[in-house]
Image (cartoon, rainbow, N blue to C red; front, side):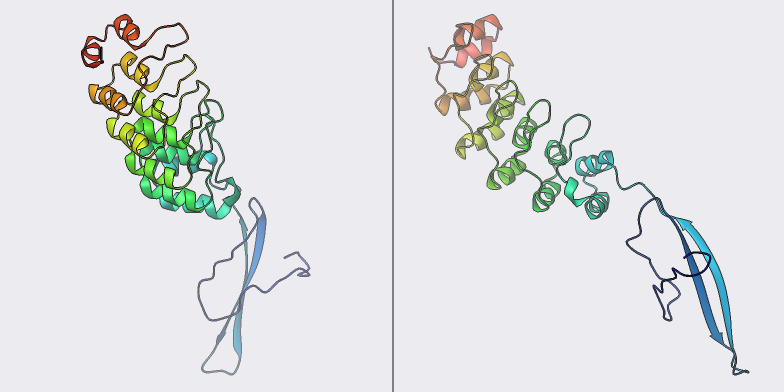
Length: 253
């Protein structure tokens, strides 16, 4: 309202002793005039009390940092507050180029992943800098349930990061045999896909000394042992160069 009361607007009239004013703009000063009328039982006259209240609304909606924190820590109330005030920012990046969905995938929060997808998170949105997708993140951390959720929501397993690595490469790098099996069984990964160095998932498994079950799984799913990397080295040469003698013992002759 102004001093002349020309802009007074009645926002509530009733008998409640509490009323919430919604949809106010952030960072603005508001004045509210309260009129309280009570009837005197011993008199026909009414007593009217008038007070003016000034307040300033907050200017800070939940920040991007708070949103990503809510996704990573599985804080539904904070997430809901962000969604209520910034629904179009569901795919917004943080300073590291990560999406909220990728953060939830890294932490392994199935419910948060489902909620983010329900409210419009891009299932294939890659990291702004590394091009790592949510599926790659889930695969690296070995979160099988989330891999399944993403795949069933049209996650593209053929996408590659800036080093040409796929989700299967990331499952291998994380040494998660269950994730490797899940991707291969669901046809969500190419066992012979090569990265920027020409390394197949099997080559990476040998070079990174992943558990031997990962190597056995890749071989059983048809990993091509004849492939050579960009330096012309095959799987046996890479095993020798890296001194991975345990891998050499289980590689076919």
